[in-house]
Amino acid sequence: MNRRHFLKAAGAAAISAATVGCAGQGQTRASAPRKNARSPNVVLVITDDQGYYDLSCYGNPHLKTPHLDWLHANATRLENFHVDPTCAPTRSALMTGRYSSRVGVWHTIIGRHLVAADETTMADVFARAGYATSIYGKWHLGDNYPFRPQDRGFQEVLIHGGGGVGQGPDFWGNDYFDDTYFHNGRPKAFKGYCTDIWFAEAMKWIQAHRDKPFFCYIPTNAPHGPYNVPDEYAEPFVKMGVKKSQACFYGMVKNIDDNMGRLYAHLKRLGIEDNTVLIFMTDNGTSAGMQGAMRGRKGSEYDGGHRVPCFIRWPEGLKPQGNIDHVTAHVDILPTLIDLCGLPPPKGVRFDGRSLAPLLRGEGDWPDRTLFVHSQRIDHPEKWRKCAVMTDRWRLVNGKELFDMPADAGQKTDVAEKHPDIADHFRKAYEAWYEDIGARFDDYCRIILGSEHENPSHLFAHDWHPTEGACPWNHGMVARKNHFANGWWAVEVARPGTYRITLRRAPKEADMPLDAHEARLAIGKADETKSVDPTAKAVTFEVNLEAGPARLQTWLANTETKKTRGAFDVVVERV
View 1 (tube, helix red, strand yellow):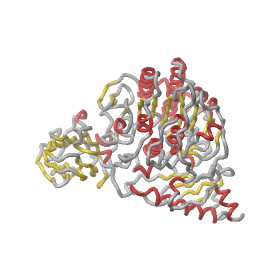
View 2 (cartoon, rainbow, N blue to C red):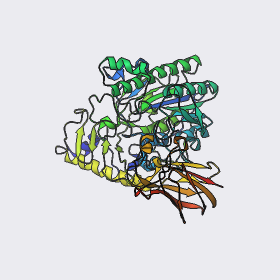
View 3 (cartoon, rainbow, N blue to C red):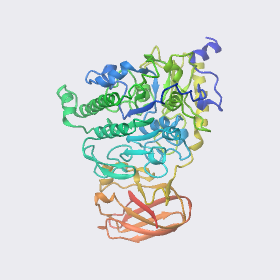
View 4 (spheres, helix red, strand yellow):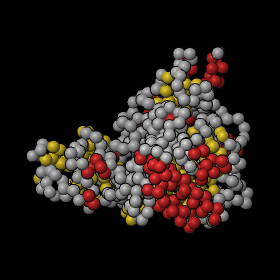
């Protein structure tokens, strides 16, 4: 195989450090609106931890998902579609059309799940074009200003906190049933099961906004753990002999499928089905379902960790193209929607994705592309950590293993020794890509304190940069009396002045004692210590702060046990 032929087979044009982040990318252009037709609505549904084979249309022997199967049969299917191997990175890339690490996201906790404040989101683009925008479910890109969905272009917001129901920033005591969620920033109690609520509230909003173009984002927390679901959904799988946790996982998927059916019927009843772009996708490989023929699961650098289903349907504007086998990714969705909906592209934004409109319309040749994915889940990224370089034909995994995907979809046979030139080419491509996306690796996305947009600010240990012990990212960890850990929040003080800062071991609703004799607060130039009653539920400091970036850290010390933890829950208010 000569050099020219190998590059063509590898599916990669020459890549330089200056362009590697956009390998295979085309400039997104706003297509002209169709004559005598309103711009299409968009409904984007993304589920959590549901893998490629967690659908009956892909051969799952236990699940029956008739409504998603119908969409599979009546939409264009991206059959080589890739996301990040975990939740928040996928959502950040989906929302921005840019690689997750480029926008500041490479973890699901410890402050590395926050999309940098200067990035433009999908909701920003739609809102600026005059669309109504809404979100229902899981945001997972920040719970404080300037990272909340209402700060990033969403006009109507109904979400749980953190990365899942029962995680640190979520309302204390939520368990998927009859929970309290955050409606436009304020807690509001709901009756019913979480997924049912997301879809029901979304459908109410769609009905109210059916007379103008809208963008409705429904990112479900299901079927992410904990695997809580109404018994009637889990029991049929238990009777099949499926173990309980997987039965509940499948029950959660079945419930999503039922809600998808209700959504289709609702759009049809309102007479807007034909002019609505409907997208269904998932955020990473399966966590508890069927692995199937692919290697790896959620979190893996192999295809089972990041190749997922993606169906796109727009009856009025697109004829279904069946299966599209070219390598595509989450970063392509925003450029595609800009193209399909005729939206003005955001100025100065360099997308890593490209519009898939030509593929969806069956037009022209599709260029060779090289795409990249990695899974970091640490505070500061490391080169070559759990990574994959992808083309239509090849996968280079961790810089070492090379797989010929048409011949070996299960990634069982490493052919790097047979094709050293190809492996080396992709190593160089990865090196250039890693350097290109790394501008934020040493920066911090800072929660802004004392802003007119959020005052007080409620901080959770979920967002710590840890210094000691395991980050207490969920309610169970916070509730454990013997969990000792600490860390600091990356913050920025918006305005100088006096700030009242209240420390608790857990949210106020948990009603837990501090279990400490001494409390310490350090932020900026302020560093104060107080004696406290160990049975007290909170301790408050008043400090004068200068404007600017700072670290905020706390200590709750028990002088009898010699144990110290950080305050897992802190409220900061400018007074």
